[in-house]
Length: 271
Image 1: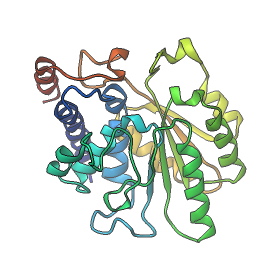
Image 2: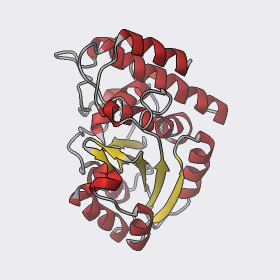
Image 3: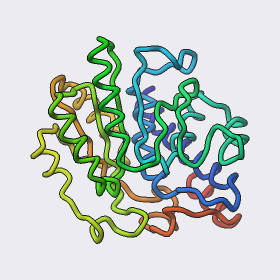
């Protein structure tokens, strides 16, 4: 995709997130964090990753791991927009008993879901395993992981940060969706960490960019992938609830459901 089409993909994914939240009815969904990471997913699925909806089990496909699995609505919306699942499949299976799109992702390779996630702090470790497997098995695929800044409270994340550098995993690229909030409040009030300084001190190749500028995300991702012997992290400064005025930087929308009036307003603003 061109950069303009990637921007269009991000817009379409945001609309799909809102429509998916609306279709879930009175079931609460994680809307705010889903909207904050949309632009990252649009860049990866629209312009970076080697994936094929017609051959989802290709051994050399790039791997995507959504470590902050509670924001799976963004992933499901992306999979719909790029053709892994249809609009009907999403509506019929999202938060439906017996459906294959539950409240946290469950591994289902044929529709592009590489990892069961939701227990925070696990995704990067899983991604390290994938990246090591590529090296051992002499495969060309890259592994991309998205985690949240609140998730970095977990000790397992820091073990993984150290392990990735120790193994020199240049085929691993991490994005931290730094929207400043977690379920209980502002990250700055709960467990503040200078992520850029900390990860640099651990030997990572670190970038920090506007997480909603798809052009910058795209260019930075290409630059980060040029480091063959060192894992890279892109700290994406984002806005929780991005794109919907009453959700932006409002942690009440970490988890919630839309009224009909709110749904109509969100659609108007995104359109």
